[in-house]
Length: 228
Image 1: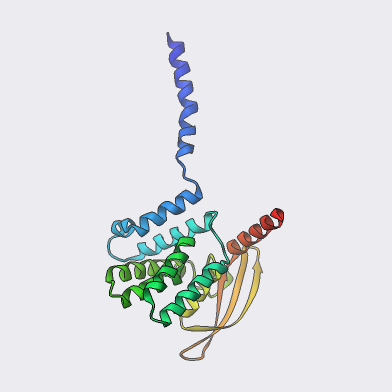
Image 2 (image 1 turned 90 degrees about the horizontal axis):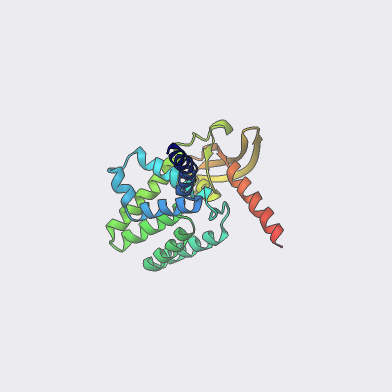
C-alpha cells in the first residue's frame, strides 16, 4: 500500500520544479509587464509620493529593456522620431508631437526624451495629469542614472544603456560636449566625455559605462552578418 504513495510523491517532485520554471517570465514578458504597470499608473500608486523609490523603478525599467530582445543600444529610428517630435513642438503642433513621442515609447519605454516631449506637449495642451505622469517617469529614470555613480572615473562611471542617456545627462547638467574617447579597463569599457559648462565655461570630464551597450551592439552586428 505504501508503494503507490511513494510513486505519487516522486512524480510530484518531478512536476513541481517544472511548474516553477514555467512561471518565470521571459525577459520580453517581464519588460512588457513592467511597462504596463507603469503606463497604467499602478506602479506609481504603489510607490506613493515621489521619492528615491522612483529611481529604483527607473532602474528596473532600464534593466528590463536592456535585457529584452527589443533592446537597441543605438536606435536611429527612435532618434528620427524624436527629431520629428521636436520639429512639431517648434511648429506648436503639440498633439502631433505627442503622437511621435508615443511611437518612440512603443520602441523603448525608457526613452527619456520621449517622456519629456510628452510632458511638455501635455502642459501646452492643458493636460496636467499627463504632464505630471511623464515628468515623474522622466525624473525616476534620471534618478537611476545619478544613483549609478558620480561619473568622475571609470570605477564610478554612470551606467547607461544608450548614448541618448548620456546626451540627456549632459543636457540636464547644462554641459556642451567637446570630445569623446573610449577607455578600456579590466572591469569594462567606458566613454570618456569632455565637456564645458554652458553657464561658466568650466571644463568637465565625465565617464559613462558602455560595456553592456557595446556588447549588445557587437552581438546584434554579428547576428546581422550571419543573416546576410
